[in-house]
Image (tube, rainbow over all chains, first blue to last red; front, side):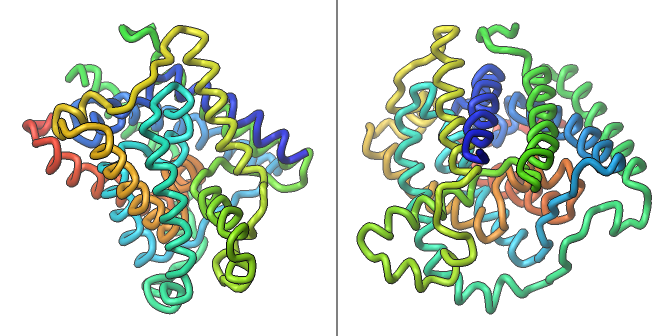
Length: 174
Length: 180
């Protein structure tokens, strides 16, 4: 049953990624060169709607949050490293599958690379789990918990900043 | 409609936001545990499934494969679904196009298909290693993490962008910054 849900959700997600035209190499790298903001408009719109929806359902007791643990060493070093690979390959794991779907065959090389990289990571994991993955462990925490304010205050702040960013993008025609 | 025949990115993004929330609500109701969108663990499971064909003992003894569980799961089907969804969408409006080298890459590295293959392969290795180290990719940390306001998601996303922007501008040449 969960496999059917996974497939259905993926098909809709892939459809929307393609229709939003965010699967193109030129759109991904265009953002990283800061000359085309299409993918970040797409992503931040999803996040704004998602924030409101997730916390509304959470407040109503319909769902649980599933927060990943914060480990500063892991997220800072891993995050920067991902960015480097993203700029070279041109896709992230989800968009690589989608790009292949719309005919960008070269995404396949990167998918092979990601499978190889994941195998390498599995070999490196015992070493990393004793070093980098122990640097700056903060645990499963959200921004409102950290700031000790109501989550709607934080969501309001994000709304203000992101909408201002959208207005700026349109003004600059990015 | 924008000039390239696609949908407005804000609209497509809003629909993805609704999908992300609906996925959590529906899977909580039906499966008992909410599934947040993510993609990078699938490459670990995929690598494990392939490795198992040649070295089953090695895989079963590996700590990381044991932690992430090598199996076909919700997320793997989700990633496969992305492929079919994009295929469907691109066929529906005629935007499907076989492409062996992206034009922007070709302009910078006009050395043919194998150069692009090597770049994509190497970049893919670095990207997934970083994503697994960080605990997620732009889906798991960027979308799912940030929409839950999680600290890990916000830090990882900042890292993705800083690393990516620095390297992309170094490779493709920096125009002036848009805010100048």
